[in-house]
Image (tube, rainbow, N blue to C red; front, side, top):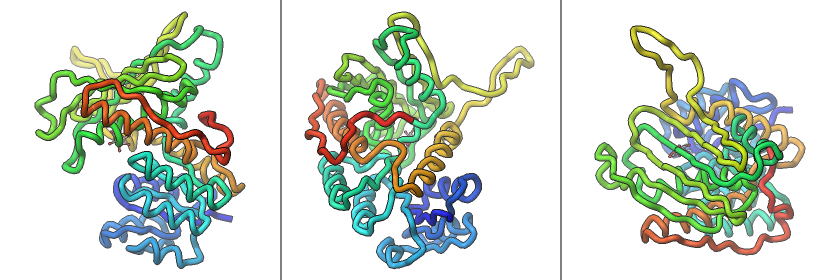
Length: 342
Ligand code: ISE
């Protein structure tokens, strides 16, 4: 039978997921949309035949047509949805980040453990991107020797009004923080942030771009160019440096046209298209796993590890110093600390 999903938050990401579940995902449908903005909620619910729009999650939890919850509110509101959803025993796909700081993430872990079952999967969709999976497979193989370093570039065209300096880390570099651990299977132990020359086209309150250095326990160094007002488009690329070669993922794909003394092709302008296939795979696998009472992707523990590294990252950004990441010991409940292979 179909998994009936309540989507909480009908902003950009929530609406995109509602559309995806309705149009492409097999074995699931959106039964409820929770969104405080009435007009936006109604518009989003209209994307999914039979879905009702509500303004309160508490009200939604009283219904009997919800089998699972997809949390797509802004990060600062995740905890207030996660805790009651866990108390109701519902499986959850939580958009990244789990929460914005490690203390609140630990509260979520405690609440999950109290249910006796891992119910949360965190939406680090890059783990479901085909090229990231290929790179991970290469790293795990013997083909190119040991991985030494990663060069990551994460570029967005522009940022909106609500986007603040610390969000360069907690909203954007957050993806590299998860995916570097996914690729290397080693936790991030320290973070450092440097500032190149400021982009004068960025909003006045932002120090954009930044260069971030992530050190893994295994000694791999990942440098991240985080650049959110680069105007031309949306681009996420990684070059991996090995003992016996280099590998690259995230090159602009698609048609290349040579004409009138020029050549080129279209670049993405949003994560919605750049990672569309990854989002589809993530949600399909979550739906399939949820029906078996499992998760199939990053866990709440993975979400906590990222939150802890983000906290160090924000401090590094503020102080200009190398900041070591502090982690609590892994609870036995999260038995395998290994980044789950996808
Ligand atoms: C946004 O929230 C995302 O998750 C995007 O993937 C990222 O590129 C962007 O910088 C974030 O603000």
